[in-house]
Length: 124
Image (tube, one colour):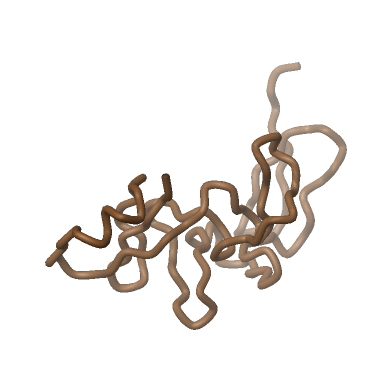
């Protein structure tokens, strides 16, 4: 089975699982087009069933989700921009903050107004 994303005006509006043969006979007169996406691709890396990077070919940057953007020029899917300050990494096709997430094991939320990570108080 394969996964296909319905793209309308560059935005994914639907994702389905179907056999390729389905599209040989499927008639869809609604606006947009269908394009294959891979459940095993994220961050422009193809992963195996063991969730480890695999030698397979990464298909279109990331698995398409509803609301994702399809960039026809680069033939990739990527998520909507989460914050105005975040920057697209065109190697992974994922958004990255201008300041890396702290790696101290604590939980943080991004504060876009102040361009900083704010520690969450989890009552610990």
